[in-house]
Image 1 (cartoon, rainbow, N blue to C red):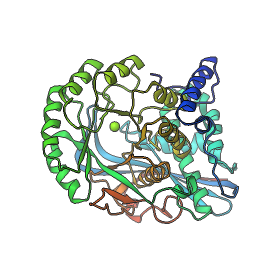
Image 2 (image 1 turned 135 degrees about the vertical axis):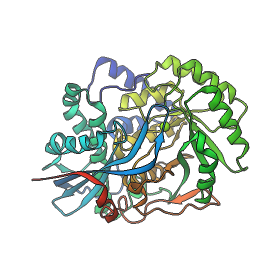
Image 3 (image 1 turned 180 degrees about the vertical axis):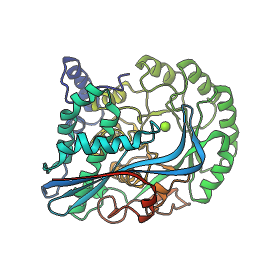
Length: 429
Ligand SMILES: [Mg+2]
């Protein structure tokens, strides 16, 4: 499984062959239009070709302390960071994006510097009519910098935030919520699930999530297969008839240990097991795990690049595709992947565990894509998410309203975040 592929823009012979395979798959699944989405991005219907000359970039990192570290199978978060980016155009339009910053622990401030010093010179003064075309262009222009530094992740994440901000500008310029710009028939609410729940704290956390209206939940496993299976089975017995449970191993196991966990849960209604093995494990290992079970597999937060997502969809071992809008692709890349996944009969479920801008962007993407996917909503305390308007969940349906207002619904960062700002850079022309 090729996951950490060099960003698209390289057109090797091998890459062309892979695209050909993806084309065949996607044509079979729903038509060549979806291959166009993967390789050339969305074509927005019925919108005026507004152009925006970017004149100012602001990037800032925030950190807020937390009482209880957030534990995963690969590490712990001892505070909650976020990086937000704001673009301003000469016509006065502005837009917001979010950049993944959960790891490494000191990475948030680095991404602010990366945007200000390496990305801003490629954005300022540019006139953008088509964010998807700009995304492909900036991926190509930064490829050698990313190769030189081996910092594929930070570059991808910074570009994802820029792309989201450009789409926010575009939607706000025409007075539409982003989902309606992407798809005039987009839904106005999305189904949600409660996330960020450690299996050892699940009883109390599920009760708290139910009180907030959730009827679907995801627990963090990946510690020891036997113990994980026992805890998940016990938890499933406590679920109501309309409730769903998912589990996330955060890449913790090798194929044999993953299969042992899945075997132990074979007779349960577990909705999916997420990242049972490393995202960059060989495709044969993923297929081996998938073939061993009827429990669907999920993944995508650690896949980056159009080719890598095409390969993952093509290979068929993932039932649920989970690209993260703040890690790779922004709106342009994730919408294309989500449309391709849906066309191939898979379900798009955006991955997200960060601040309020990225959560809104994920909700808008899901509403625009449609299907049976769910929005991941972290239920751990985090002012960087909670300071933003938080729509109530309808407990009867497990749905929450999408963004109100235009774009991503954010005119300015909430003033409550000022106390958490650790680094801020503004660059003008
Ligand atoms: Mg995950």
